[in-house]
Amino acid sequence: MIANVSAHRRANAFAQALEEQSERGPAAEQPEGPASAPAAAETEQAHLLALTSGLGALPKPELDPEVKVVQRAQLVAAFEAMLQEGTAAGEATEPAVPEQRSRRAKGAHRATPLGRLRPRTRLAKGLTAGGLSVGVAAGALGGVAAASSDALPGDSLYGLKRGIEDVKLGLADGNDERGRVYLDHASTRLSEARRLMERGRSGPLDHESLGEIRRALSGMRHDASEGHRLLREAYKRHPDSLGPMQALSSFSQSHRDAWGALRDQLPVQLGDVSEQVSSVFDAIDEDV
Image (tube, rainbow, N blue to C red; front, side):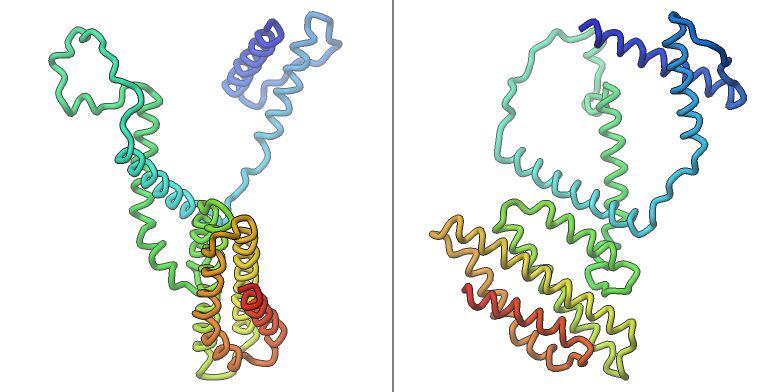
């Protein structure tokens, strides 16, 4: 307990010295000289202040614009999911804590119903401001997120589209649900590869177009493989439930024909990734 109090006092003293140094400016320096025993703490504090000044002089990191857009989309999706969960919980359950009875404060009879909704504490005010900020961000990004659903590899909104998919995957619970989300992503990658091939109908595909189609097919192979693995593990864990195998069967039957038609149109440069995707379908059919 004494050690905790001492550490707390030292932290407060360092914070106060840091504020004083910022007020004096960077020109202020600590005097040099041999440190006596009573001044050992001050010497350590001087080293920490010098380290803080050095860190403050470093250039500030800059966040990539695409990463910023993806993180905003993740925040919006997580906030929407939190609101949905909170609404569902509020409709399904009653408050667990009974209402507390307290004496009416002086002047409380003059409070209006709208005034009762005003945040009183600093925490409540911060949460209210944060909720309003997220609400504004959600309204601003709602249309952008909807538009990104049709984005293809190479488009400006494709990073936002993949970020939203990552959020959905992170919110999935259990191997069964995660496996189904992966299969949905594999279906999206197949659609992207087909649309990219349709772009090249006017002429031969260039190197950049071939790279985008390869990335889409590689993503489909990865997502389909992960979905297959997770749903197979879910079925092994609960053999009495046929839901995971039914999801795999539905995915294979729904996309086999589309994949066969697309595979016949692929150029020879994509033969390796084409074989990999076909092997995933074969593995799913074998398990089913």
